[in-house]
Image (cartoon, rainbow, N blue to C red; front, side):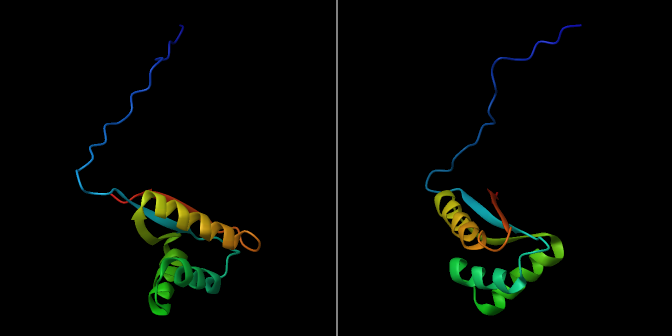
Length: 102
């Protein structure tokens, strides 16, 4: 039997609400090499968290395996993710991703 795959891709319909900017979560993923201290410092420097809030976010990342560093419009989320990765790369393999906040 010969299977024929469709030649067109149907994209999901995303309805934009006028005046509402879609928001994106910047996610940090836990690993065994990136230090907790580094994560706290990055959360304070690039995401504007207080020391206490940065510690709480870091503990969420550590205990759940992933945590939200911040929620921003797409371009800003991409910038913050890239800043974080650039700061980490010389020393740590910290994985940072973004996902839709809705």
